[in-house]
Length: 94
Image 1 (tube, rainbow, N blue to C red):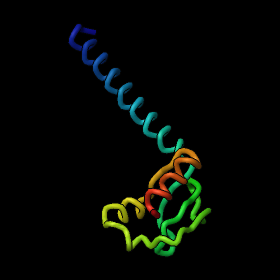
Image 2 (cartoon, rainbow, N blue to C red; image 1 turned 135 degrees about the vertical axis):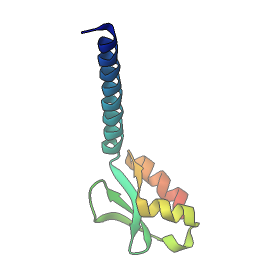
Image 3 (cartoon, helix red, strand yellow; image 1 turned 30 degrees about the vertical axis):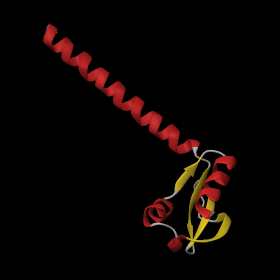
Image 4 (tube, helix red, strand yellow; image 1 turned 120 degrees about the vertical axis):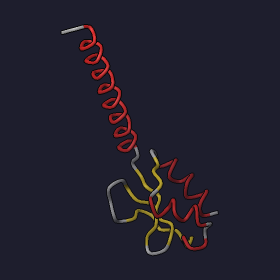
């Protein structure tokens, strides 16, 4: 292998390592969220990660929220802990 080939090989290995590390961190962040604040039947609702059945449905209509907040709820807002979830519910429903 010439020096240029070795440099390219090292560069590509380093790049691959960076991509894999980024993917692993992203996956860990997604699985770290145990709860999701979202929408159920037009209302703000709390879910366990991966479940379609809400664990709590609030009286707050998503349509009554500012459009940006409503869009975030429709996508789902992750919460790592039950305390984080309750804080989000208070923020969106008060």
